[in-house]
Image (cartoon, rainbow, N blue to C red; front, side, top):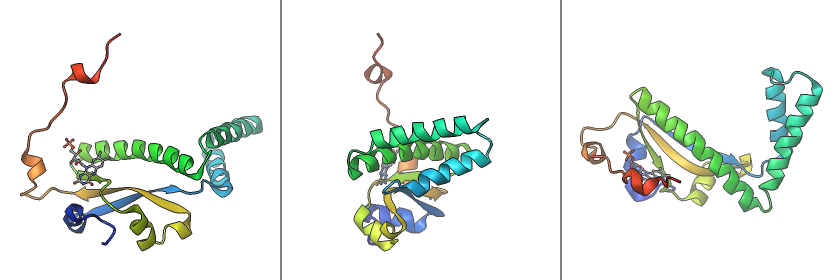
Length: 154
Ligand SMILES: Cc1cc2nc3c(=O)[nH]c(=O)nc-3n(C[C@H](O)[C@H](O)[C@H](O)COP(=O)(O)O)c2cc1C
């Protein structure tokens, strides 16, 4: 696992499952068509006009966030972090432990899994499983900034 940074190696090697969150790069025509077809199949549109509107709306936001390939990737990454939040929350809800990880070399990961040839770029790694008895993070208290520092009441 040369792509995984040293402190994270053991987390990955002992995890039940390791997920690599990837973004499509570039976000291409085929993907846009694929999404629209799926939405159509799932009954999202009452008429062809609704379908065209959805397609146009999505293309607007894709274009709006795609000034450069890096901008597009950053925009996609933000959306992957939404999925990350859901995954961490859902795992905890069913008693599965998880660790989100940015501690890996993306270039090496992309190369190791041949991601670029599949039109993908790695963004995040998440391990899932049950914590070990000597998991030092599990026994430490949680640390959270007080709400007065987090929220501004107007
Ligand atoms: C975006 C992100 C990246 C993280 N990267 C790593 C990492 O590379 N290695 C690691 O051990 N933990 C990583 N963590 C996990 C944190 O170090 C820490 O274990 C976790 O946020 C503690 O959460 P808790 O306070 O809810 O228990 C990451 C967490 C987040 C949200």
